[in-house]
Image (cartoon, rainbow, N blue to C red; front, side, top):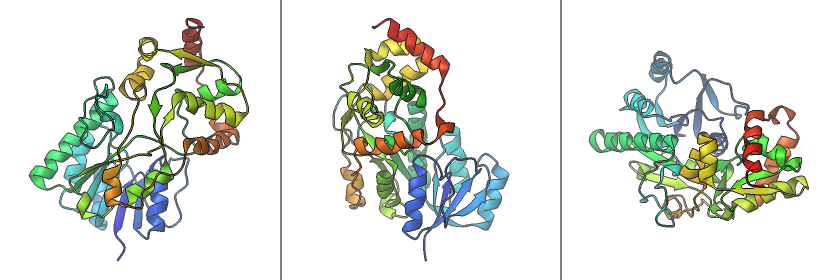
Length: 326
């Protein structure tokens, strides 16, 4: 009998590819969703309409269904993890929490990054919340045998996700030949993982008893500089890139939200060791280079006028920063 799997979410940037592959692998996939995503429900998935924050509705669902695996794609705060432990404790064989590789120690003291790298990010509240969620789950596993598996994606993308601040705001500047900000000197190493590659490693964890009580990072092994990321989009659009290099600390002073994501994540060179996920899921290989994946993204934005949204306030702040460094 196929394993019965519940995705809370399942139509997001990362989860959409995992939904497709789970169905392809023959899993009995149910999506608990509000139905507001721009991505369609995959054919073959069983839809349960609802909101995870409607506790009465969730409890009613659990009375009707018994799941082997529950994956909550939309947990960001410790209180949400505590809610899920109460909801699913004793009722599922595996609960998968989506954490973040950004929770790893910053500044990074040792490369490559493994699952044993300390979690300590003083710069980004998002990352600290993910760490706190992990700590609650680990304690629940150790004390109550709550069957948690922790997954740490890094920068994972699909055709709709741009790697820039403001998304299309920066791509529009590239297309129009305007100067664009690249943090630092653009030479720090970064890792971008296509969601279809990620899905291979992730789906291989579902229903796998060896994954209970463990944490896994799932990322590409391919390294790319931020200069090359920006250049890839300029090449895709057939335009000349006009970079302006600004220290991340200066950006953080002008735009604290943008700066938190830089100082707490993207300003640091990263190299991930994916030996642990490969030992459990040998078929996992991240083969899609970003120079190829970005072509899909650039084409999607070119063909989707509704997504060509410009944050003029952000663009103005970029101009103010650039004027100080040109």
